[in-house]
Image (cartoon, rainbow over all chains, first blue to last red; front, side, top):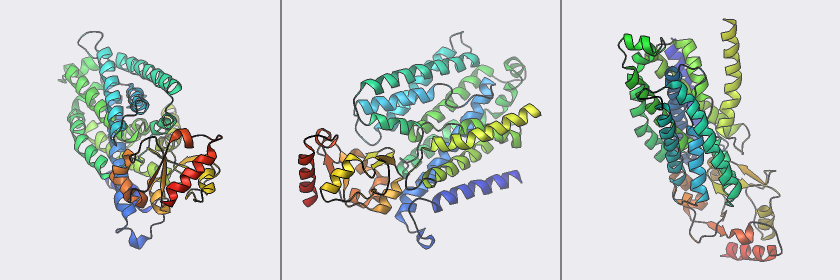
Length: 313
Length: 108
């Protein structure tokens, strides 16, 4: 029943994002329209894939660091990606893929630094240090980013802030294909770690006694979730709150078993982002809002409601 | 215009005024902000004859090759007005020269 409902919501979100848009396309011409095929359809699919990836990455990281506040971008990736993007623009790197590649490289650099910090206590990855390291590296990257923006004279730098708030305007069949080929690998790694992630909720020591290879699982989950997020930020900028709110809502409905929680977070995250992007494109048409603004405007009230429910319960 | 995200110039911006002086009409002249982020499909729907880009290079901007941008007719036809930033980027005594140059470009 709840799966059927989720499937209906997801299908509805996808259909709406193809049917609705700032340009008037008559319903009869929907299937023949260039706007629908080359702009709305890839954008809807990219939104779904990115939202789903963020939902799963968030669910995985929340289980890993055993902290309900964890979000795919909390671990410094947004700062790294932003720095990469700003450097690409300040250096006038040419080519259609310069910005996404630079953002991806920036996110990977932040990932590497945070991972190295996480290992600081020895061979064991410490989730608390991962969190602290992520916040610190993110702040450091943001400081360099701001320094570049305030010193460089490229007029385009102003616009990178819009890009950083997230947007799917760069969507094309190429970017959909890229994400569709890339994302299944980290997604499969996370899904395969479902059982040990369940055990991790009991604490690392207990999980170890129950047969989980805690060290390997922590590394695998951290790397897979971060690589998933790095790809998402490369194609769509920093889209907040999907990776924070969707896992919590999914947990309320599907419980704490990751074997069903992760797929639910994928479909739910995809539906939420497809829906948010439709709003971003249409609410202030012909203008457009950064989609990160819409997800935050939807996400924060939902989050407040959840917090209230938790504190009452 | 800037491509990622697509940002256009609206009513009353300096470039909008230059275009009007040169006898052109900004397809986004109804937007009451100097610049605004829009959806790509809005640009497709408004179907501009020319796309003005502040650029010091002589070749069309990189996004012209991207598949999603090919949906815009002016992009497919290579109708770009590449305006050097030093002349078109800010108002000044050379605004007259800028208008004249824009007229010449449009007359081609």
